[in-house]
Image 1 (cartoon, rainbow, N blue to C red):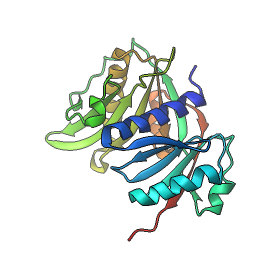
Image 2 (image 1 turned 90 degrees about the vertical axis):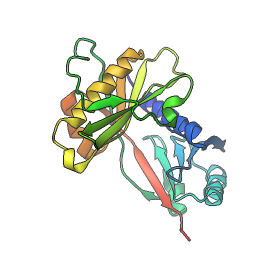
Image 3 (image 1 turned 180 degrees about the vertical axis):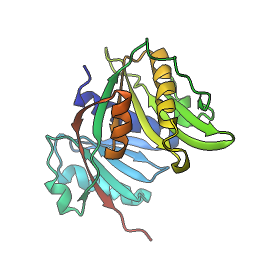
Image 4 (image 1 turned 60 degrees about the vertical axis):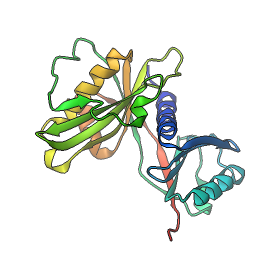
Length: 230
């Protein structure tokens, strides 16, 4: 069984992997864990059990020092955002946590030549041990979509893989590419030892994932502060 805590840990691990691959960093302040992602200029706090000024203010100063565009805080239902509102954060989108048990009998039967794995392979896919794979969809010579599958290297007896950053180009939506990406990434995850997939969906994406077989297990919250830009 995949829990909300599993989803949160995997999301956090994904951001830490991105940071490690792109010159970012992961660090902690008072009861708050942060990830700095330089490519997107995001400073992200992942699922704090408590939000305090002692944890928040040093990270805000670090975000300003590094030229961040935005500071985000991902929350579960147990945490309260009152301190965030006091510091100009605003409520944002909700991650809809969804999971799917991988079925070996289903996987590998509908391979689509439009989707290739690690062609190209960005830096996060070169981390050791291997933990991320990029599926890229092309129609002819045109890029048409992409998504990552990520297996945290340290998850004990769990065998989970996260689907992240799914994008299908507007001109290629409703052509089966989203399903083709999920098929190829599911196959890759199974070959790497995963038994379950998880992801965070938007309400629009939730329709595709539900049709594919993912089940909604809960919803999270995010808060955002956009730093003044020069």
